[in-house]
Image (cartoon, rainbow, N blue to C red):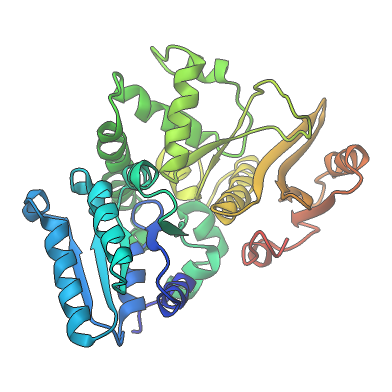
Length: 391
């Protein structure tokens, strides 16, 4: 069986064919296949490749990055041309960004053609290093959870399965064993983010509150919930500032975000957010009542979250923003906005679903485009094959 190839592979190959200009940073949530993408992109590469991973005891050895870099320089000199250096799990190396900056700038000064790719399992720690020392020296390729079409093509998943179990390829073998699937999600994705990435990034006095915030937010994905209500559901939660900070960290990790209410006002007060997972796997793993025999109401929330997760992943790294809108009793599930375009999106799982919110939105913002997804509109499988630019 041939391995599945994501579109990011071609993107990495194209960047390596261009003249040397920036470090290539492959970033994204855990367990979405970043290392596999790099390996597939470099399969059959003409230039010599040095691949090193900081997974293991050697990561703490002095000069680990320098040794790999000098090997790449030597191979480039022997080839009288280019070499590619891949540094995987680089966030595990202390002060890695300062070292990368030093060697990259040396190569730039001496006109050495060393192409550098950095990646790691912790997007939180990786982002910190990129912002800290490498501003202006890197280009980011965002790798998000797998789309419905990818999971369908790679594993034969249908729409209902994807709506429940989401876009993590490593979980596919456990689809028919819910207990094993939950264990995979806990041990490979949720706990490493909470106990490793975030606690290593900064001191957090209440790690249990961090985990509970994720659970409460993920279970309510696709729904508006006030920060005050969240505090009421979280023992010893403290104040709203703590929750906002935790949610920002989960957004950076690619798990959960708080969508703001759409407005064109320059100044706005903080309104109740709409919780949104990046893929429904996170919500299901955190206790959302989504399964094959779910009630019509739960199915409606499940598919609304499914559309929102697709949109949130699609806008990552683009000029688009995702929000939602409500005015009194009129509501629109999602609003996709760019500097030149506004699209109001409503999700329907019932023939009787009303579209009053879309009409009210267009009345308020006449230049907006509206889209109905699901029953009576664009079929879910078709919509989930679109990206933000398509819309």
